[in-house]
Image 1 (cartoon, rainbow, N blue to C red):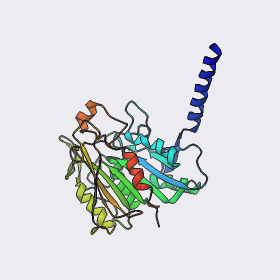
Image 2: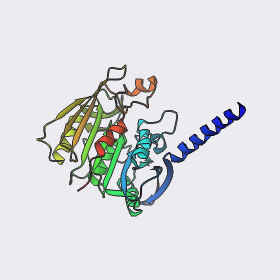
Image 3: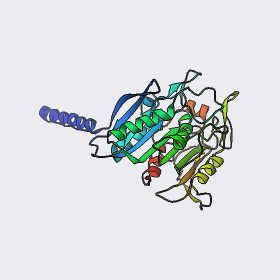
Length: 320
């Protein structure tokens, strides 16, 4: 009986060791850009196939970190689902780390020319440098580059779509809209765009307006539908017929998720995923924030996994 128990324990330990060995690894790396040392975390899937694979850049929000985006901390970001996606789909995921701005908090130099809190950093050069490094190493597929960002990171994803070379073929922007006063370049090529925005977002208003809490406003954005229309025009989809999809409601809250799609795969394509009564937070099936957080930023929808929804959108799309 004692021997049988020992064999059972050894079998469990062996299974855990194999599972750990097969899990995606997170490698902390640096790159020099414009005289600054920039940090990022590269998710390396187990048993990665040889040859170029898709690459997803993930951008945290204001005050955030790359580590928390990939699951570190007491309340892991819903974007940490990208670790499991990377392992399952055998794709590279690079979580980029923003620098501190004049307000003392981490963030990105996005398109908002009226935001004095934006850091003085070459974030386009940073993202492009990471991409070029992985391209030069033969890891990344130049035709399958994608970006997903949350909040300030979502706004930065627009800048990368407009200015980064090599350009992403598709982006996903959660709780972030286009700048009203923009210093970004005009669109010069089609980019597929997935927008995820809550109608009750207290920081980034769905209808557009000033960004921030209460009297602490930092800049202004256009609305979710105006942002959608900007990309429809850029992608020559202004006359496309919309296709609506309502997600099954799984949570006990009063949010609802409705996706309106324009264009067809493999693209270009624009989708607006509206979270009715949703706040400034990523929808998630698995990663839920507490009630205090929801009290501050609004309700979190639990009907879909944001990262999985982004991968659904990204996967069929490849640059021509």
